[in-house]
Length: 218
Image (cartoon, rainbow, N blue to C red):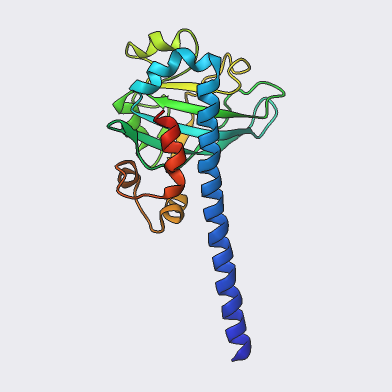
């Protein structure tokens, strides 16, 4: 009996520790996303895109896109999606982003990535359980450059990509990248299972995200 109670206590403590680790990961990711938003605003290459941010339907911030192979291989990272709600921004929904290869150049192992979601059709696609850029609906992503603003004024450029390694990413394309929600992270961060649509409508809140929302609203 004593052994059984001890095992149960150890199991309970382990579960609590695991839960705290997940919460720490999510809170840390939000904090990193806030710093990326600060970096983005201070980057001279982003100055011409401030109007795009003001017109964006949503924003997906991936603080660390990691290269897993050499020239070819798997790349990906975790991020947060926030939707524009009136003059402010929604609560963050946790997502993962990955691809067989983003074409990262040799020697470039990771970078900060921000996706400005410029169209409703792109936002609706990303809100689904799994979304592939450029597949089916013809949704395209263009890297931030002198031509990005012109692309978004027409039918292309549903998503505009800013990265801290814009120069090294000169020929980068995100078409074919897979974006999907991390339901377990969303549940841990908000304390219960909750859908992406409820998060983006700000039906749930976590005070840890206020700094990120304020930075985007500046």
